[in-house]
Image 1 (cartoon, rainbow over the protein chains, first blue to last red):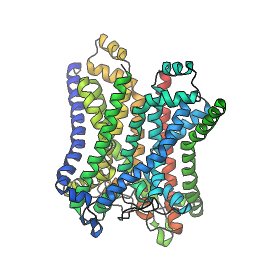
Image 2 (image 1 turned 120 degrees about the vertical axis):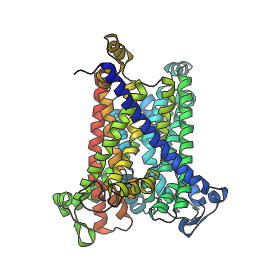
Image 3 (image 1 turned 30 degrees about the vertical axis):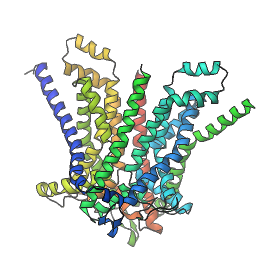
Image 4 (image 1 turned 90 degrees about the vertical axis):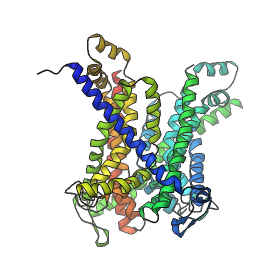
Length: 279
Length: 285
């Protein structure tokens, strides 16, 4: 018997719709569940006081500081490299075998799992360069990890600057570098910022690469050679070692809100940027 | 003078442009340098195919972990791939564009949820559920596969839906003009045209599942044994590295780097396949 195409269509749409709904429900459940369990435990006191008994009680202030400093330092290192590469690829060269190799390298780097970054960061920065578990080891490792994100978004942003802008600048006698600095980069700025924020978001949520390079000290870092613990690492330790489920949920709630907020800012910027470009 | 500073800028940028490639090589060199000699010392086939992992006794077989990683990844794909691809098709073809413009960014936002949070949810919600309804300890192959399946959903949906969105509208219109129903045009024309992008999204998701560490440590149970049932606890390659890293020295640490070598090679192969698949799509156009 042949089933009528109309029936097949109704059936297919129902199944696809159900699958989509299930996906959304699961993902929203994750957020709602963590927030509903964790938010009651979040207070100004929780945010701004130091942990007691390895985090069994007290707050998360040093981990907030770590979560702020580590991505900041990582981006400070990665941005000049990523942006410089993007400028080179778009403004200073044509597609050659060399640029294809660079792109291939970037793609490969983007696909490497974070635990490999952790292994590398540990053996290279912590052991070989004798830096120990510290803010700087962690930041250098994270910088390599987010480099592909920053490179790609910057490159896309720079490419979307109309060529006419460059031509006008050249016709006024500007050199290539002057054109890059005064015309191309300012116009590509929102796109570049988006990449930076996405990189920050990824750094905040990262655990495997951080725990083996930045360590997990709960003390307040004074220099870049002090060990720090980020919220993700703190949450992982609380949950994994069963130190305190209550504080784990509260930390998770702060962590999720931070990451969602950071990503929301990135997407809003990106959409504004695209909207402005397509006018 | 102007000319000179231009040359200098170009020189600096050329050097900077090497940073990503140089980082990749540095990572590969260091992981291999620490891990590969060890593999040769123990014997590559002993390392890969022996089932006893007991670093204290000098036995370094990672076979159970290779099997575990494989099962967990495939299990995650069984859950994540159909759901994700179905979601991508539905959102692109059967949902009004304004709704799609809200849902797609929402899903991409969710891609930012830290993996440890998924792991924790697995421990608190999923593992007790599995223990009650399927038996076993709860922390298991099944729990890891489900959590990873959920975690890769944003990757699959986002990349698949880009591929489906890139299919020219004239294809759909052609099919509809020939009297096809919406669904016929979707599964006979649109999905076929977007096939390589969809496949690439699944391969990239496999790479993510295989490489995920913290979430897996939390839910998989971490017993080094070849699993016989989906409710058995397992230890994956990534979990093995992260669990023993803290207190491993000497040979034991080299063994972890050797585990890293295996992981690195497999992921590079997966990513190259995904890249080649995506490129073929580019060439077809």
